[in-house]
View 1 (tube, rainbow, N blue to C red):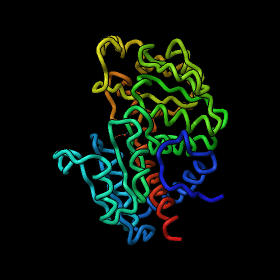
View 2 (view 1 turned 180 degrees about the vertical axis):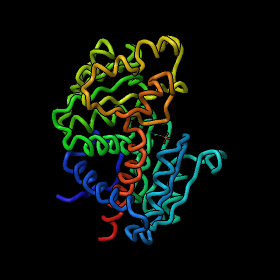
View 3 (view 1 turned 45 degrees about the vertical axis):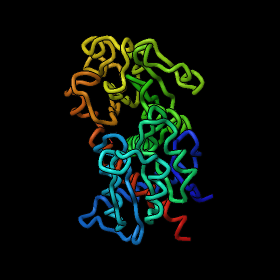
Length: 308
Ligand code: CP
């Protein structure tokens, strides 16, 4: 059955068939991105509004460029420059955006579940661009797309996710998405930053980074979210880097053709050394490009429903 979702809220609730259709569509979009003339009429007459309550470079800009490449009207609203700063609530803000004709509302919000709540109150399609510590599905999809580009299939790959899992919506979306495609996931990080519910997801929780990355096909290094840390959760940044950071010695434990990924922005010298972030195994810049292709695919698939 073809893709019929109204919204993209998380990979937990998306089935394998839908994930594969998004990834296959993104492959076509990547082909368009590689042309001299990137402009296509796929979203002609459609309006996309980016509503960001948290900072973003990659996600917001790639949604905006994806919209423009496909000939949609794109508008951006941030909480600091909107009537949110005067006390308008999230639902009223989104209903206002809907009544201006938005076909898709892309929302990033610090509260887990914010995108789900909006989706229940508007007819516009809603894309979750990151909700609190819950999910960041478009990042998960672009990560899986990047893995598939290099490794063909995800089934049976060992994917290590390293770092601050507790605060990471990227980790959660990757765990849901990669598990659905048959990856074997290992996790390592400070014990204070490993959420207890992880055990139920089928991932292997490792006692050390070394154990998690041994023979790994892919290593996803997470950003240490300094802005979300409470006291006592972390050793010093220096100790964090020494015990959990990805460096040359640790990298040598993984497979020779390992892919190194990071959602960005990077804290260079803390969770990953510059040598590795910029090295031959790094997919970090490809992830950024693939983010545009995946977001083009999502905007196309969600608005295609409305064209019928
Ligand atoms: N990976 C990611 O979400 O980056 P931004 O915060 O820059 O969007």
